[in-house]
Length: 373
Image (cartoon, rainbow, N blue to C red; front, top):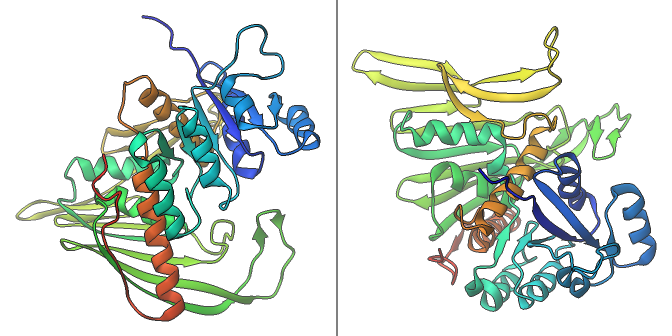
């Protein structure tokens, strides 16, 4: 069996999210290789080269043609370009990469507003070259929940309640768990403000000891055919340990509440089982801290294909995105998260914000990307 060559990718942008992709490549050089990063200035490029250990260039053209420092006589072209730039910049960078006939994995969202989404789709949607780096469905716990649903354990999935991540991420996860398409959706949202202590922020422990007013949004999304998403998010919920994740998936024959799966078995039997995480490196296990698998009742729902890299769940999601993108490039798998899905998720995220701002329902209509493959 021939050893698969690492997926070669380049990155446009050098911010916080870009580093996730570079870090995964550094930890698994046999599977991924970052050929270079585009930075706006030479000074930033020097910092990236010193701290990330990858060559940098100033332009997309240099990246896609392989004109990278140390490439030698043969160009070192990326197979795909990760676009991790600020929202207003992303559509133009995506267009430039697509114009060079290179596939794109664009960070979320692919454009800042509805007009931007429509314009980007009109320009590049038909090429089929653009995927979106929506990482939430690729997290191990969500892949395990989806495996439970796909097995028919809770019957037909009808609703998802998400208090975990925000806007387009939450919408994308909800549609993934329900297997929902891109049809019309009615959104009803309301914003509330209440006191909440914020002991941890993006930069670590804050030292705060008193609550401050914090906004929360509650929203319902009616996807039609009896399927709904209940959205509940508090600002800074990603980092605040006082607001934990909550995922509920309800179906015709049972439900999943976080890691508990309750389902109908027969006329006199209802069972509840747990999705169990097996983690190496705890107490006398000397294999190193690593996720091994998630299982339920003796069946493995998710097995970590990146064992040995010691990745957190969010890094595992990034690794899955890169791995799935590589398989798509080789023709071995379907597209991981097409631009059409990224556009739909952000469209609905914007509808949540609009409804929360105005207090009125917002109903989206099918867009040009609704029926795209």
